[in-house]
Length: 268
Image 1 (cartoon, rainbow, N blue to C red):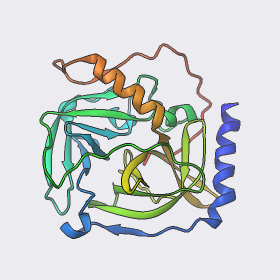
Image 2: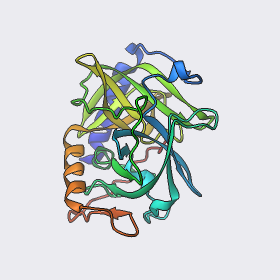
Image 3: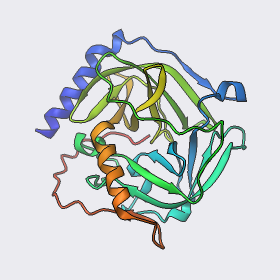
């Protein structure tokens, strides 16, 4: 059944991909270009590489849960993370260490093999060691999940464009199923955790987080998490944990067993 669900999602992408109209990537190389996007940053992971993350509270950033794991499935120590908000050409608007990192309680790290249920829970929050309080760096609000046909945008770092974030102002939601959002957004290795934006009530809000990328008929598609329910659950768990403890990295135990279908996507 899960294999069939994956096929159905990719069929949606194949059906609508040719009709999608989208803009290209634009590098945010100047302060003027970056205005409004300063709360997106590169999440550096010592000894591993980087992901992308976004500020959702003055001391909390949102990214993909799989960014918290080493290749052997062990959780990374929080002292290996550094968030560099608005990074461009080696300079960040703000730089913070990470006090603790918490993946969604129902997320199971499975390396490169993913199933829809895994992508649907592929979110994590990282608590910064100090709050970011800067008039140019405003935490983003969260939007209701996007629907098929919505225009969204994404701000991301990626392989070959590590030194400055890139904005794709318009990409398209091809479909959603089992909590997975399928989009035409152009993502690359390092784009994991990138915020997907949508305009609601005149304000730019985060509607999804990039989890994985796949190819359909030679066209790349991005797979994202539907935030509405999963993020509320994650933030509730985070609040219940209380103050950070020594060691920092925490993961709540998932008591439900999962079956691995072996379906393969590529982690960006």
